[in-house]
Length: 223
Image 1 (tube, rainbow, N blue to C red):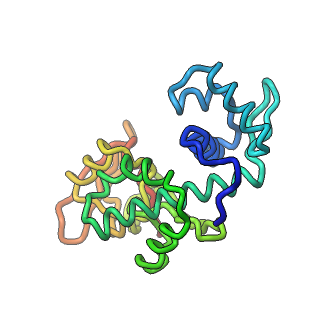
Image 2 (cartoon, rainbow, N blue to C red; image 1 turned 60 degrees about the horizontal axis):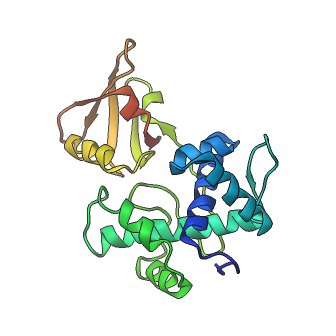
């Protein structure tokens, strides 16, 4: 995917990626949302948004939502592709744990070399998902959409395969490690508690384990 002229600033790339991420989660993106996600002050966000609008990477009007242009979306998907390929490389080639790679990939995603990432893609066999189960955009920016539900939605007695996690923070992944849960594991919901939404699951060859509602809703499964 060709690097767009005028991009290259680490800060600008972080803004573009964050806007894309927020738009996927909520549909609408506002300056206040972006300020909270990036942990910066509103005037700083306003200034950068105006700068990116001049570069035609997004459209924005005061008191209205921020929307990426097609050019902005392609740039965001390019950055996401690099991030997720980097995470997979760190896990599969360097042997790091899935809980260790996010912060390192945050730095590697800004490496301005398409050849570098195309070579990683080839080396890994053109993978379609990162270590956390999130889809990797292809070289043309296309991203596959899979039908998934959260583990908290799975009915009692039903089985499914863990396909992805909706949180790649180290503390969350460390918690899943203590539970012995990984991408690809088959799980069965044995019991759901009406009071707090906690879920008791069983896994093949392992003891049953209980997950809080907040954990279960951040685990994505495929039937």
